[in-house]
Amino acid sequence: MPHPKLRSIERMEGAIAVEFKFRKETTLRARPALVYQFHLAADKNKFWTIYDDRNGSVKAELRGELWIEPLTEKVLRLQMEPVNLPPQFEIKGGSTVIDCAEIGLGDAGVFLLPTSSQTNACIREYEVDCLRTTLTCISNVITFQNCHKFTARTRVVPVQ
Image 1: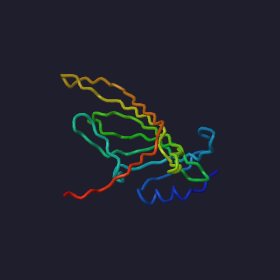
Image 2: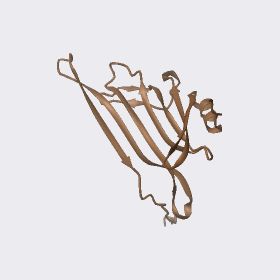
Image 3: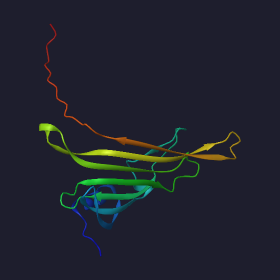
Image 4: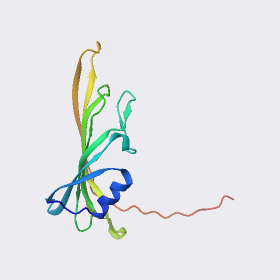
């Protein structure tokens, strides 16, 4: 059954020409979540650039999922991967998952912040004869924890 689009999804579709399609209702970390699949055509991708070690870059076609808490419309998870990368590009494929949660920062308040991120990439390594390639896959996992509010007091003193 089709699910009504959230206001935040409608705003993103208009702002960055991304296509969303409701996929399912589920839970994530004991919170209800609406999962939307998305697709961003390469010619509409104005903000996400992938760079390789040979100074190559591409604004790739992207697909993924956006997990949203239905009552607040806050992002709980973003999953995305580039598709149809050029065959001469050093990076063959990859994916990124970013989890978010509301984090209290003392008297500064509660903020939606990333709690973890995992990026996977598979890279083509060309042999000297350029006739053979090997594929090396890597993973980078980041966990954000123990965030604190930073405060400072300053005073401007005139030069005498």
